[in-house]
Image 1 (cartoon, one colour):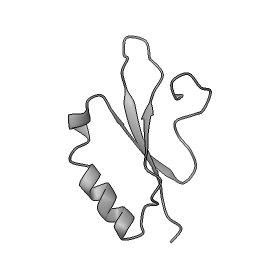
Image 2 (cartoon, rainbow, N blue to C red; image 1 turned 120 degrees about the vertical axis):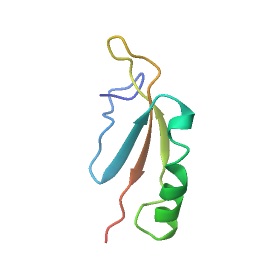
Image 3 (cartoon, helix red, strand yellow; image 1 turned 60 degrees about the vertical axis):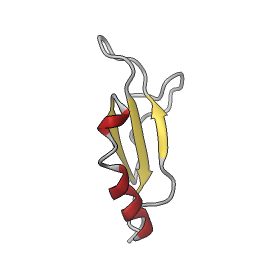
Length: 70
């Protein structure tokens, strides 16, 4: 899967990706992501991304964040 209008792949080494359709789908995850960023487990590089359309499915979005070296 690629980012919209690019050849960049969604998955990257040392990154976690959450794919969602509606912002309500990630509201529960964001506090945990911010908590893990404060603790140094996740990097402060959270990205909000639009994904390419798939057959019969469009409008997907994703959050991508780096995992800190522990």
